[in-house]
Image (cartoon, rainbow over all chains, first blue to last red; front, side, top):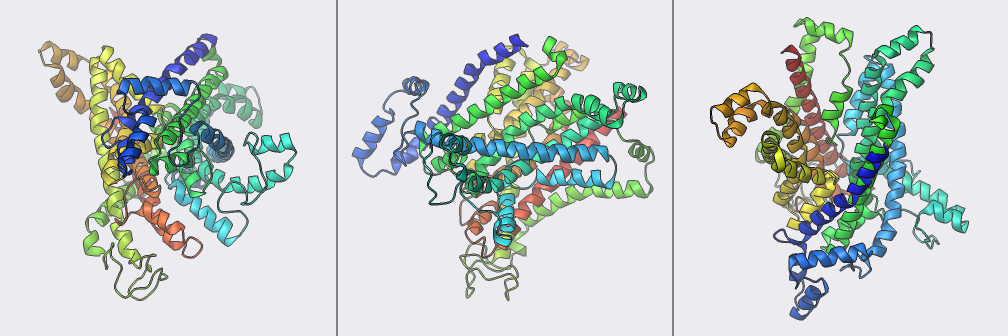
Length: 334
Length: 304
């Protein structure tokens, strides 16, 4: 287990380097690259020259690569062309909302996916099972942005319960310390922020969580049914263990491995979904930053945001892998 | 998303429930006929969408791009001559919806076809040849897979610029690793079989072994996976267009129509609901068709 963890941790820098290389190449080498388009918008030759020098584009590609990599390693992600702000600062502002949204979506996904999956497994073959499986299929086939808008129509337009966009009410008096609302509330005693924050978080989290829950429903159901058919479950029943005890200690415990893997895999889908949901809900996270940067050809910001999302994804995959090993004694020993 | 379903489903695949197994051994009968009909439904729905895309000029009552003469802006559904109303430019909403099938169906199908070709070839090469070449190909695929699918697509669009063709390439590129992995694992299994050894012993070149011996045995599984992948590709296509990175106005596209309608969501919600529902229906039909194809393939393998 320890050796495995070490090996994965040692591979991490290599993987991040590979990801950086891909992002770097995508933004600079392919024909019609962002930089070309960006500089073609500048009419003045003088301005263009200045930009080219500022971005280091007068140097050779390997040189640019080494310089950019060196700067990023020192925490310097460059300056945004559109906002004039340091990309590192933009990331520090945009990452906390995205992590909040990811955690909230994960809670929604796990709660809904597990519940529906286990109920479907318990009712295997019934109309309820059939209906829940159909629902799961529908949930992972609907476009995220459209599902989000349906929620807005129902909960903001018709019922008027929840705000349709943003992260906090406009004009609220909030000076971020960490920009994690819960943490800031605890640090500065501003507990009045929590209510409005949760109300704004609900619809985006439901959008991302429910549209990614369908896969979990399916896997949780299949894994539970497959485990319940195994011999040791029959043995436990034969020994007189009660239904709930068999389910919790024998079935669920063993089925949880397959479920855990899919939670990790679905996190990738969740990050993708949150890119779109952040745009739909005007939610100031890293996904919205990426889309704004790509749309505005702001390539330092695009590079920073893409690296941040990929890093987040890789770290979560690593954590899932480690958790998987820790949960399965057979793999722990291996 | 479809990164996991095939593999994960196999791992957790339950034994068939008794009543179903019984029904399976008794071909024909009412249950069989109903089930046969139901399993064809998604495929028919997919064909329906393709037909809609192809026949759009015949079906649409108005021009989808130019404002209809004399029509007001944002007419409600049920207006005379405009059964679904008009959009914020005074264009016939029904005609835009009919033409909107084109970019979605085209980009989804074309991008998956490209991904199957490129990923299939890379996977075949890696699986049959193995060695350092195979290792390099597969490690590259692993790195590509360490991106969320839509992030990869957004990056390619960032590099190439927005547009229908570039978006198709972006979606294809983001799906290549999925097919490369599948093809590699299948091809590696085939490469150890006697018929491949025999072909090699007969002096067939590596390309001939790869393409005319191994490829036909790998292709069916790839095609089944492709059916499900169209569903994901359609969702990615719609999402990119919604973000303004895909199909560009004034070309009618369902994803972009939702984006445009979002401004008027409190005023004319149906303008966002209908195109989104059509995207969902197409994606759902592809997902169900993919499931049916997977089930059929598994049944055939069991019979072997």
